Amino acid sequence: MHQKHLKAVEASKESAYMKTARESATTKSESAVTSALKNVYFAAKQNMASSAVPALNALCISQGVTQLCDLRVDSRTTYEHNESVTEFQEAISDVLRLDLSTKIQNSGKFSLMLDESTDISVYQNLIIYIRLLERDCFGTVSPQTYFLAINRLERANSESIYLKTIELLGKKGIKISELCGVSTDGVSVMTGHKSGVVTRFKKTVPGVLATHCIAHRLALSCCSSADNIPYLVKFQEILNSVYKYFKNSPKNMATLSAIQTVLQGQTVRFKEVFHTRWLSFEGSVDALVKNYSSLLSVFLEESSGKALSLYKPISTYKFLYVAHFLCDALKPLAILSKMYQKKDLTYSEISPLLSSTIGTLEDLRDNRSGHMLGNFLKVTPQEPKLDEAGLCTFEFEGHTIRDSQKQRTESHSVCSQFVDGMVKNLNSRFSDNSDGAVLTSMSNVFDPLLKVCDASGDLDTVSEYLDTIGFEGSRSELTSFANFARASHNNGNKSVTDITSVANLAIKNKDSFPASAEVAERLLVLPVSTADCERGFSKQNIIKTSLRNGLSESNLDNLMTISIDGPEMSKFDFKSAFKMWSSKKTRRILQ
Image (cartoon, rainbow, N blue to C red):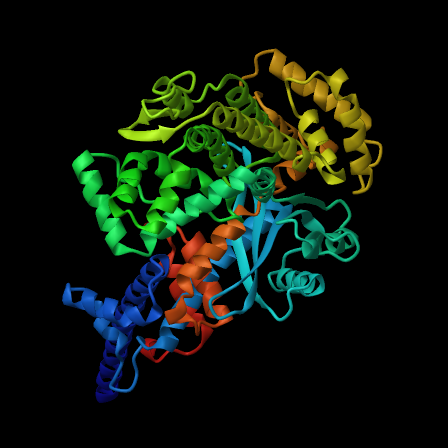
């Protein structure tokens, strides 16, 4: 009996030792996998190829991170090969998607931004971003934008895009009934009145509001304004010819650098002008003006037919006047473009930014008040003057410039025509359609500086819109809230200062003003630009290159999810990623 007792005690000790050993082995394995997940995360955030992860692991081991050695279970089993790296990426991206899913549920309402493009493998892809509402620790609601997915399209028509989007929302458990708005680039496949993607969404979900990306509208306004002026078309051709003259010749570039070193002038790289991205014009004109003296010296030094053909058109008063005017005029347009591409821009910000830019352009046209043009005019004669040879010339930055009264008249005309056309196009392209009119009325209802009596028509428009989404007879409530918001503002409530803060006031008082809160949430969540989609395609092209053109659709989606929305490494939950990875299937390293 005593012997049996001793054997039982020994067996119990062995069992305890085995349990401790297993726990220790599991802890070591978890540590190894967590370290590998961190390296995979780092590589994805830095847009490194997945094939670089084993080398990154080896580097870490050589630096003393010995736990990574446990990724090799035996001679046949390792967790560093391509399939394992892909599984690590999937686990990380699943954690990010789960977090986004929680945010979508908490937001309730959401909007979509859609765009399509072609990748390096000549596949057509649909990229989708989602805009939702988040509350901070003080209860203030603000819109946030996240990458949702990138999907391959067999055909880039409206039906395919619509069905692919509906399928994606269903897979992610996102209720289509909560969709408030859709923003696109305005092409017919997206906005067609009969069967466009937006039209299909409106038939499915009452109350969906659509916006044409304001950044696209701005670029189109600039293109149209320049294309209608022959001299600006020629001006653009000259800029591109100068760009190619140096881009295609190391000799010409070396000559320019040598001259700039002697003259101690500014060295600014020439830039190409793209017609579809007309606002790149600003960088091109700025580079030419800053390199002007050196540029003329290069052309005179070379004395080739090509150099002289470029020297002649740019050594005139007309060219210089237009170039300096454009430096001034394109600056506010470039600022407006950047503001319109700002992440989480709200509809209420569009009109003030546009109005201020138009005012600046008109002032530049009427008063020639620009800094660059002013400096140019200070060093040029007020009227054309004859030189000793009987020609109208003047000296500018050490070079002889041809001049005439005709050139001066034409240069003033070109600049005035450009601003006139720009203002006309901006007003035309940014005029409200039916959805825009609703959004404008929403903004006016929440504008604390606009008197309620002056917003009567806006209250009617918003009330009619609310009727279509189940909030019948809301006119009186909207009026009551508008009066309450104005009273709060007029009585010195410092938290009620603009449209966004008034919208938050409505949301915080949702129980008392449900219809007003509904309008506020829809106004805030509606996207006004697809700039995030454009940034997403830029990220796609950084990740999927000619050397990585075999990336599958799912791998590309995982890598973009991590690269775009992954937080800095110290803030990512690697424990959740480990649990996600280990729960997918049985792992030998954990046994």
